[in-house]
Structures are given as C-alpha cells and as structure tokens.
Length: 143
Length: 145
Image (cartoon, rainbow over all chains, first blue to last red; front, side, top):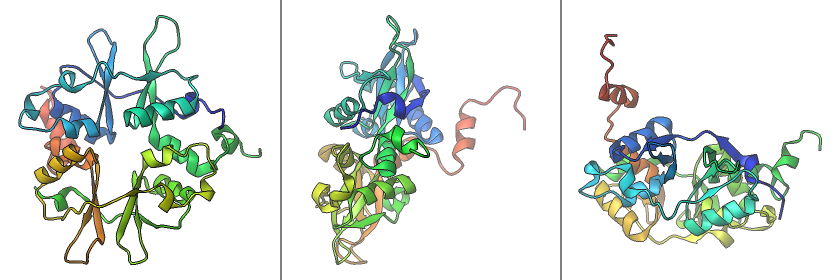
C-alpha cells in the first residue's frame, strides 16, 4: 500500500445547504453546480451530514416536495476525515458506508470547520494516472 | 416522463479481458462513473462502478481483468419504462446505475444508462434552460433585464 493521504486528493470548499432547504432546492443545487452531493449545515455552521444523489433517490416518494434536507440527512452516520488521514482508511470508509464523497474537516483542536470534500472520482483519476505508485510520485515531472 | 427522456444515450463499454487500469482510464477521461462490461456478442455482462475499482486501490491494476472485479448484471430496463418505475427499482435494489437495453435492437444490447444523478435532474423540476428557471425562483426586485 502506498502512503498517500487525504490531503493529496482534497477538493477545497464544499457546496452547502441549510437543514431547512427543501429537497427540490437541494436537487436544483446539485443540477446547477453539476455535483452529486450537498453538505448540510445548521444555523451555527456545524456540519450535520452529507446528502448524496443516491440518498435523494431513496427519499423520493409522494411527500418529496414537502420535505427538507434536515429530514433525510443521517445524523448518526456522519463520517468525516481530516487531511492527514491515510487514503486507504478513507477508501475503506467509502466502501463501508457505500458513499462516494466524504467530508474533510479541519484538524485544529476544537474546530470542526469543513475545509472540503474527498471524492471517489478524484481517487479513480489518480489510479488511472499512475497505477500502483503514489499520487505524488506520479505528479512529479522527472521523478 | 419516460426513462429514455432522462437517460444518457450510449454507454462506455469495455471487453471482459480489458485490464482494470484501462477501465479506470476510460472513466477518468470520459467523466463517466460506470463502465459496462460486454461479452464477445456485445451483450451486457457486468458493470464496473467506482465502488468496484476502489476495492482494488493500491494493487497492480494492469494485472487484474475487468471480468474479475465486475458486478454481474441481470436487470433489464427498457427505455419505454415510466421514470417512476425505474426509481422504484433503484429504491428496492439499492442499485443506482441502471443499464438500459432496447428489446428492439437485440437482447441485452446496451443503449443507455440511467443514474441517480439523472433522476435528480428530474426531481429538480427544471425544464430546458436550467439557469433561467433557477433565477426565476427568486427574482431580484430591480432586475429588469
């Protein structure tokens, strides 16, 4: 296994919505921004969780237009990593929870601020680029 | 609304003997999240998504074939299905990539792909001209362009 860390594949910044945002608006946020996730935060900017496109499918029923992001975000299943988490660990988390995005939070003590997202797509792109070598080796031009 | 209105027309497909490295390249280059594995007759054989690839992170991808990691695929969804029927299937099977096969073209011949993201576009209730529609939701008071 290589010694890659989450930081190497970190996408800085995350698209967020509040817990009162209606699910239709969440769908619009996804479509307009061409993303497959939306991070849900509350009024005091604490992370509540992440809604993926797959979860939107599961929430689709007759009540769909009346529900909000807070109703379907799974609070107990909130998974976050920090930039120094080994990439293998993050991938294991993705497989366990069958998700494609994990929230990356700040590792400063006492701070839970969202600094970005780690996406399966970026990891796959890294695997396509340099196979079994670490991402940093593949990116260095003359190494 | 029918499946054929929302699906991606055409799929990215690979051979059973292609290496996983090539499959990963196909996905990254084409910005597709899934590759259909077809057999020698061009029929749907299996599906490879991010989850299957991530399970082999850190291994030598040039030594694994698509056949070895693919998820065998047995569901047949026709383009004429109403979208609600497809959503119901996704919810029941927890399967968010549906390969669309056209029975008129030939059995198990892939013609398109319907993913959860395509359905989210339907949920967003936006017709053509996405951005205009979104802007109409909350018009600014002075905006008279």
